[in-house]
Length: 445
Image (cartoon, rainbow, N blue to C red):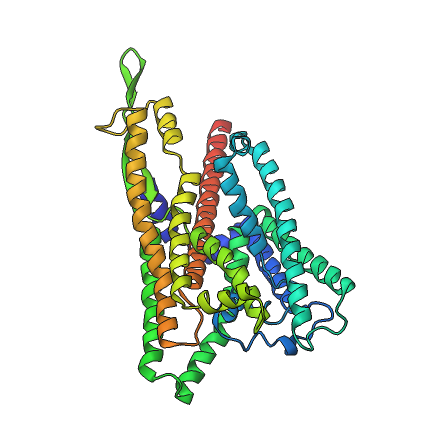
């Protein structure tokens, strides 16, 4: 079936089908409109803040990297400065709670009703996190010389309300893309922000080569590394371990047998996708960004963060790698339960050849999935961490690293795959309608 769908997708004329698939075209236009609104919001500044006094856009290191993740909103100190990272942090906490809390675990098993309740809890937690981060922003802005015209209680309340409102609007916009558009709304918002910052970063790289601060071989090497990483990401993200599934034969009449079919259970090498990279960046990002805002603060904690957790530092790289590997295994365990999958196979009478149904099948799936997750974790760690080592060692001021490239490529691949699935579904529906019409016509005759 997969090969048939791939052939159909390859033979389809994208433009011709889009002209006929009105629903898909409307969904794509909705996503485009939502992204335009998002980009406009990245230029609406926070009230009573002097952006030039903060001068974040000209700072390097980790602030430049997280400014890229926010689509430049952080550097311009806009209402979308935090992007959707408070929501991602809240999602991490809720996923962890579903593992340690029996109540949360039971909610997950309640289907759509439980999912709505968990989503509501996640939104409440997002508001709390965004409010705390907004207060931190306000306090740090007040400490920057000349950044705030009238510091005080009213300014802090205004910043908190604006930051929380911006975050929740982006969460709502992402949910609207999920329901009325196509693709994962939150991931598309993050990827679009990264894509928006690519032209300035490429221009800065060319300028560095032209001015001589970077050698020409270094510039060419960076471009070659980007192309190589893109090809590796595409190859690994499309790779699968297909497990053969056998369905038993059944006798439906005295002389007729049915069933005995075979299919495959596809297991991706990187089951968790881009989630570990986003989660790791979100957890590491906020305290380091606050430390960067504080600058030459007298706080020992902030000074320690600036000294040891800066972009390219060994401790930052080690924590980054650890978090990526941890979330690879954690998120894979959340989205794929070998025991549930083995129970489903047993319920339908299916089995893996050579493996007994039930507990043995669950153990086999868990063993295969663990090995695949280990390979996927190493792949994600190398993609995300090696550029950090490279940039930190050679002090290259180009911040489109492996994490951002991974997010963009994976989100584009997932979106294109959903578009192709939608087109195939539309093609099937049109064929069924034609078949029904022809059958009705024959009956009338």
